[in-house]
Length: 208
Image (cartoon, rainbow, N blue to C red; front, side):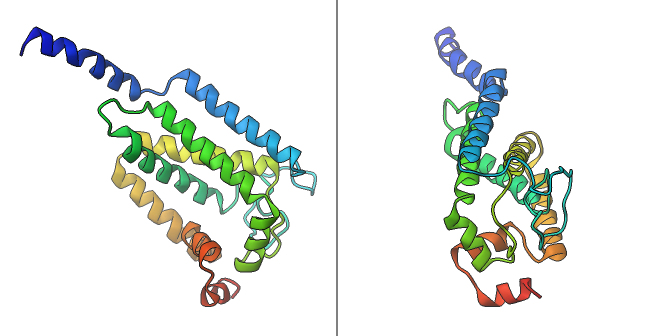
C-alpha cells in the first residue's frame, strides 16, 4: 500500500467514523424541531393536554375521547415503527454513500418528516378521514402533548434501529403489529390501508 493511497483514504475513513456517531448538535436540532412542531400545533388551536384536565402515562381505550390525548396509547407502537422505517429508508438513501450522511442528519430528517405528519394529521382533512374510514369515531385530533410524545416515540424507534441488529427490529415490528391488531383490531398497516384505500370489510371487522 502506498503512502499516497493511505493518505487519500484517511479523510473519508475519518468522516465515516464521525457519521456513525450521534453528536450533541444534532440532538439539540432534533429537540428544536419537536419544539417548533409543538408551537405550530398550538397555533393551529390544538389543546396542550387532554380536555379532561389531567395527564396519564398510558390510555388504552381506543373508542374514547381521551385517545391520542395522553403520553402514550396503542398508537405509540406505530410511531416507534415509523422510526424503524425512517432509519431503514434514510440508510438506503444516505447511509450507503461513499461519504455517508451522519446518523444525526438522518435522525433530523426523520424528525422533520414525522413532525410534518403530526401537523398534517391534525388538520380537518385528515381528522375527518380518520373518523370516516377508521375505527376512530371519537377522534378529534391529538393533544400537543400526545403529538410531542408521538414524535419522541419515532425518535426512540430510530435510535433503536440504529443500535440493534436488524433481526431484532424485524421481530419487534412483527410483535407490535400483530399484538396491537389482536388487542384493538388496528395497527400501522391497517391504518395506512384504511387511509389510502378504505375497505368496508376491514372497517366492519374493526368495528366488531
